[in-house]
Length: 424
Image 1: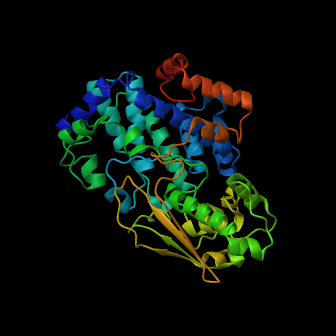
Image 2 (image 1 turned 60 degrees about the horizontal axis):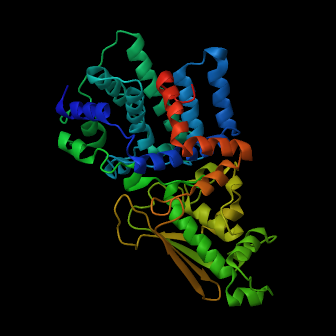
């Protein structure tokens, strides 16, 4: 076993987070967000098709196939979290870390839950690492959420294979000269790099989790919120109110309510052009400037900003349409991307939206800590609302009760340790 692999194995074996309430509190929110993302996806056609495909064996569905289903379903609406070990170069090269890093993370979690040690754990990580894949050209298609399913399935399958066969694998998956970091990330990682980063303080806290309330790429969160602020400001501007004979609302809540419910409401009749400002390269994941389907629109800042300025808020159902109308693409053609914001670290995001009206008035807003970001996280009430999209109130109460009290979490973890994989 090489020194880097040995260091990773040692840290997995020795890690005990039972006294890290800072990590556990975030992890509870993250798991509840996972459930809130999973439930609405189970009505999607592609998710149901996969369920039927893997259920052809009836009661004999394997743990690996169940992991595939739940990984795919939970990521299908793109309500995910982000984490990075070797970015930004990894992402720039076209990899999707949910697939590449995710399978190793899945294997590490299973190994820890099942109490693997030494070379057994190294071989599990090795078999997971050799299945590491996931390419970002799949964004805008069902291939992208499938990366999460494949990562989960391959992690489980690797464990099952090593437990029930005599197969042996390399115990040097992270060798600095020829190992995973070198091949996939084109970088050299030493044992000191691993030791200095391990749970210091932990990626759940730094860089933290990004959680979404709408099913679009997280790279658009700042731009969407900035567009919402601009839309509300424009809608209540004196020129707009007087032109349309509206009474000014007494409160922001009344404004937002009216904005989203006004029949045939659209600011586009007043808008000349829109500019979305990014730091250099910060929009790489938003690869579609003129999407033709709602699925592609999940990865288009143009489509998301169009929705906000047309309806006052993002409309989730518009990400399900098969063909985006040409009239909508005409509106999107008025939206331009520029890269005039200062470069930020890979853990930060910032976007500015500028709207110029036909009468020359200009409205602009910059957002760098949107709702759902590490510095402005979703609250338990936000998660409750998200769960409420598909679950009943009593179901939500039971779920939240189980994950906000330590004495309820431990029995769940014991079940996990016995099963070796979630949901089985």
